[in-house]
Length: 131
Image (cartoon, rainbow, N blue to C red):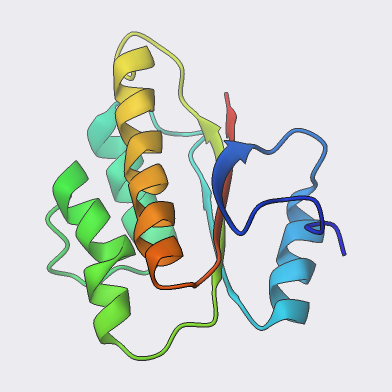
């Protein structure tokens, strides 16, 4: 079990974990596996579009950081009991159009989502890497 040493509600660098191992861990735990490859994104709107597409958000997704938080928390919570989440944000852009502040805002949303689910005793682990 590759997640034995990982807190149940955390956002951290993917480091030594492989995406395939995380996907298999989610499957064995019966948790949702959400994966977004952001390597083609350049700016905030690209990042949001790719996440919405790859996480299969509803068509009415507002494509802003507030809407991202809502989709990761309230909308999912209202859809019924949740077993837990393993989220991978791979190759988050690191450029002038998606600078350090934008990257921190994005990760803060996932940290807030981890806190939200943690309050409900539901595991939410998010792993990320930068391009």
